[in-house]
Amino acid sequence: MAFLIGEYECTLDVKQRIRVPAGLVSQLSGDDVGKFVITRGVDPCLYLYPMSEFYTEMDKINQIPENSEEDRDFKNMFYSGTSILTIDSAERILIPRLHVQHAGITKDMIMVCQKNKVVVWAMEKFREKYLNRNPADYQQLSEKVRGKYGI
Image (tube, rainbow, N blue to C red; front, side, top):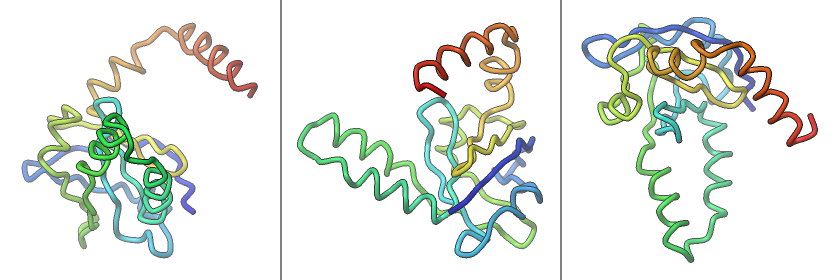
């Protein structure tokens, strides 16, 4: 099981590659070393899963029956955006073109670790959604969400 922490700024090169930060690479172990599975995020972002974590997520998704069109649509949307990314000898990964477009990444991006996955945002979208907010907004959101779940 992965336990990923940290926030890393990266730059997309002209060949759509990013250098995976050493701090992130060092957190991978066992079967997770050297590869990620990428999927499109629910927001205009990307999810990078270590292999073991993607298998866990896949097991959850496969429990959804295919009885309704909505269920099938969700499964198709989830799986249609998956690819295995191998970290090369220069510690880079190639981000597929459709994924770059989905996230609106042009150059600068941020990778935010969330324990079992890395969420990748175009820097300008991340700034708009999170960094440019009033600190009081964060406090209100924290109280609301934590209160909802009793944490």
